[in-house]
Length: 236
Image (tube, rainbow, N blue to C red; front, top):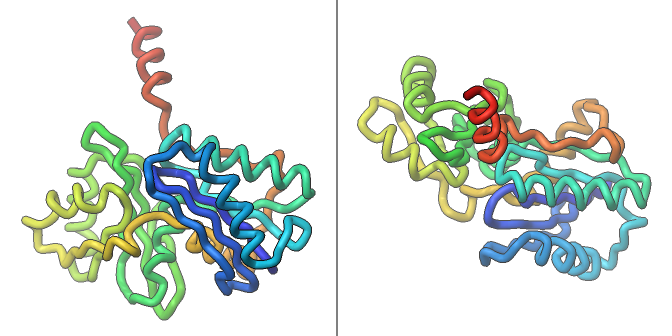
């Protein structure tokens, strides 16, 4: 099973190709360029450097959110376009869940946090045991203070590793608790397409059904800033 995977949910963007779980190539750019400039060149390079073409791909995988609204839209749109043209199945992967796969070799509790502004984070909590990832809660947007309380009440006896662009922010908030909390190393802290591919391959092995290009949708978790402002005006 050859999977072509994308991630463009934050500042960085990446493209990876895996074959039966083995990563064949990965291209990663974190230079602040727009994803519309970087995704296609990385895709071309990933295919060229593995002597592949789109006809050799069996499925597409995409981190469909949460994350930057623009970044999520770009990644989903590119995936939908290729999948439609090549008639390929699509596997949706939570951005938060994909980051748990960065630490697949470490038995721990992974607290994935992405900065959602206004003292809130997008969050998912996962446990890794013997190379398996177990989801402990649904993806959600919540206040950092509420996450701190929940972790303290439920997981004070666990080794917790923070991943995501909200990791440092949360680490500063959690450091005065009795939590055993750590920051993941920079190389393992942020989302990357190889982890999206790994999560997608896991989902297929467990029997999760892939989607068509038409069924593929972004998962924002909350309204955009513009939509929230519009809603406020409508309520006045």
